[in-house]
Length: 242
Image 1 (cartoon, rainbow, N blue to C red):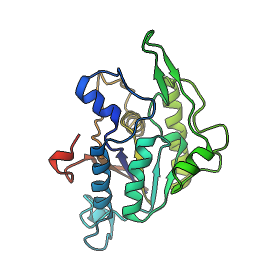
Image 2 (cartoon, helix red, strand yellow; image 1 turned 60 degrees about the vertical axis):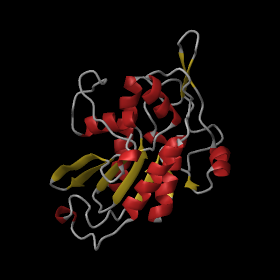
Image 3 (cartoon, helix red, strand yellow; image 1 turned 135 degrees about the vertical axis):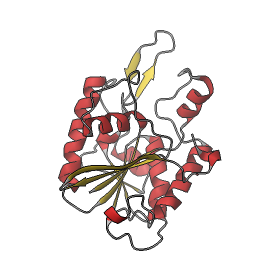
Image 4 (cartoon, rainbow, N blue to C red; image 1 turned 45 degrees about the vertical axis):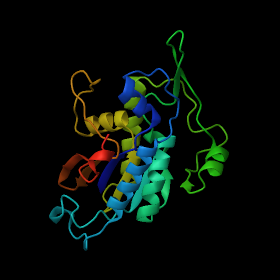
């Protein structure tokens, strides 16, 4: 299995932080900015391009001949869905929502007065079927919504990542599948740290950085894991790098 981790395009919260280094004014589930949508379109074209038969992955460690994705997933968060849809349309694969792939913390609001962090429920099956008819929904999504917990702490995030890894193995371990996952920076960092058996970090003592639409490739083989590359964003023009 090859796993391609793809961070979503620039969101309105990303742009807010870049401009002010503050969360004042952040929204619970931000949309893509116009620049973020351009990034997603560019990524879709890049992932869809083919320069010849893909052949043996060991002979194409940089995907010079193309990617040949076989599966495409995203989280249930708006910025990941809309990024994934642009890629889905370009590569011709269905986009499948994966409940456990959401950003660390889940859906939450910050009280402007007290600073308290409060979890916010996620949309249910009817919400997503109406708003995103192209998105393939998991069978377990029902009327209650995809996110019903409070704010997710560090222990909750680590437990969720362990469950995600179990699901990933059940779906794709031991196959030649090429799996694209449109995900989030915090989730990406902690997933990669778990895979590489690196002690948890909060950003003060180490961090795996991922640009918007940065792509990382991990190959899971019978001989063991190979990290082929991390945070590839050089395919984007300078004006689209955030």
